[in-house]
Length: 190
Image 1 (cartoon, rainbow, N blue to C red):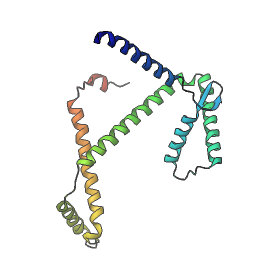
Image 2 (cartoon, rainbow, N blue to C red):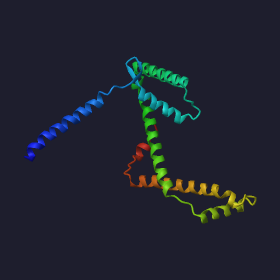
Image 3 (cartoon, one colour):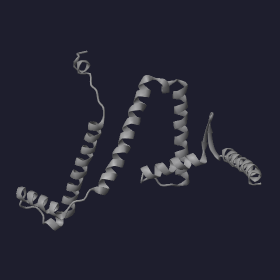
Image 4 (cartoon, helix red, strand yellow):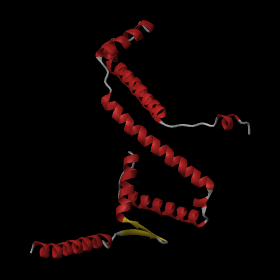
C-alpha cells in the first residue's frame, strides 16, 4: 500500500518542481531599454545604478541623473556592439588585456580576503606600543606625549605585523608549491 502511494506522490512532486522551475524561467522581465538585439532589464539597470552610487559618493540620485545614467549605458552598449561587429573582442591584444585584468582582480580579491583574515588575528600589545614610542622618542626628543601618539603608533605596528604575516603566507605558498625553472632557457640571450 505504501509503495502504491509513493509513486504518485513522486510524480506529483516532480511535476510541481518542473512547473515551478518553468514559471521562474518564463517570469516576465521588465525591459527598460532595447539597444539593437540587446535588452537592458530594469533589474540590471538598478544593480548598475546601485554600483555607481557606491563608487561615486558625489552621485546624487535624481530623475535627471537616472536618465543620464541610462544614456551612458546606452552609449556604452552601442560602442561594445560596434567593437564586437569589428571583431575587436577576438584580437590577441584584447584577450591578453582581459586576462591581465582578470588575474589582477583575482589576486586583489584574494589579498583582501587574506588581509581581513589576518587582521582578525593580529593584535598589538601595550608593551609593543610603549617600546616603539621609546625608540621614536630617542630619535626625536620633541615627540608628542604617548597619550597623543598611542593610536598612530598602534596603527603603524598593526600594519607592519599584518604585512609581515601576509609576506610569510605568500612565502609559505611558494614553499609548498612545486616550481620548476629551466635555468638554461632563462639565461639565454634573445
